[in-house]
Length: 235
Length: 304
Ligand SMILES: Nc1ncnc2c1ncn2[C@@H]1O[C@H](COP(=O)(O)OP(=O)(O)O)[C@@H](O)[C@H]1O
Ligand SMILES: [Mg+2]
Image (cartoon, rainbow over all chains, first blue to last red; front, side):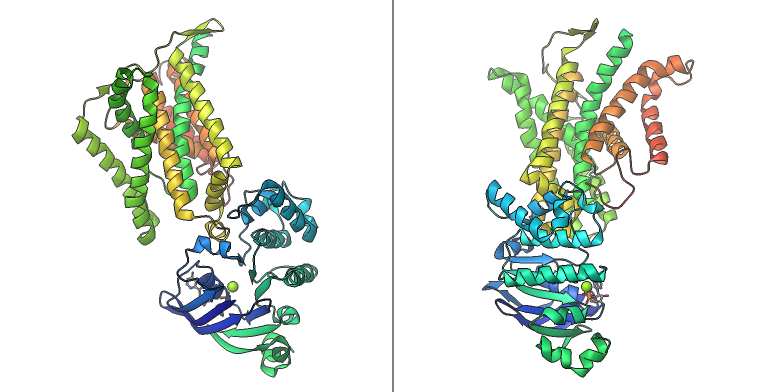
């Protein structure tokens, strides 16, 4: 469904992503783990066109994403929940969700029904529909960012460190929601520093180290790998 | 008392012109963080368009104010062309400073173009609204004044609805609040920026109609002081904040008008009406000392 081949990305003289290839198949939950600064966010930004790669191929569902104008990517069924949430701070919670469905041609009733569905997944958001999103807590903003992504009716969801800065309890909540989305048939690429959490729910995983894929395999294989255990699981 | 009422209406009249122009500054600033110094000159473009198209309208048997439609068309074209040919390429390559210098150059370019096309002497504009004065609370108010205030408030209400309730308005707010998130939700950022310039320029054309209905002349530099005061209004209300531009515009109009009428009396002739512009700028400095982000501004990084 999503196939990256020999991707290279640079920030000026900094060669941040080096010959990265990775693949996410239909219905999979794949995780990309790596330390801070490894280049995880950069890869997601290249996928959704927020920055232009130096070389490589990014194919999704028969489309060449590098040639697709970035604002059109969400209409292809790819939703990106960026690092740092990036909710619209001066819009209400409800307006943020409406923005999620911005490019879809749906009637008012469908919109309302789908917002209702989001509120069912995230009851905390329902209590705050009229509140400005900038005043939400970090956990609530993460939920809103995910809810907004779901409003675009995605086939694949790219999640950039959804657990960042959240309490263990909230991480668990977010985790169970990711599982629910996955069970509903949404393909997921989960980017995480929290390897333990990510590997616990993923089918397959890639390990990124200073811009290169150093290991890949099923989540189970990597969980049992000594190097992963030492470097990422703190065992 | 009657002088006071007169000055309030006067202030509201000038203030609604400032408000519409301030909206153009603030909307463009909100979306690309650029002070569009050429914005004041869009009013001048609108005024010359009115100057030459009103006679055509009248000859065709239509009301003179209908010329504003052509004024809007011309201003929107000029605004969009300035954005596409000057600002956008600079934004891609340059820094904020290069963008600012480009804006100042565009302002001078428009003024010089007007001067070479129409000469530097002001061109008179035919009567736009031929109205009788109206009696309000025993005070006679010029019909033009009331019409100007009415148009100003109608436009402000319409704009508020568009920005808050329509898809286009939501796109504009999205780009101004978080450009990355706007792209990820499918907003065409470039198109939204172009549209913002178009709306700002259309507001400048309406402001030109309102201004010329009261001060019927067009000159190459007329946008200078008008634009500067509207910019002050936008900063006063909180640059980037739409209701702030409206509030700031009305306040600047009222302060200017009241200070013209009363400053000499109140200060025993020390500050005469000739200082009314200085009074406006003094108040700006004073307000910004207390509220650096403007009256409605929050002192934080995000602005609508
Ligand atoms: N805008 C930028 N300009 C220059 N270097 C950057 C920029 N963004 C990220 N980098 C660098 O690229 C590398 C990868 O960053 P990033 O993709 O954010 O890593 P991760 O998401 O894995 O923490 C880091 O060395 C970082 O310093
Ligand atoms: Mg990151």
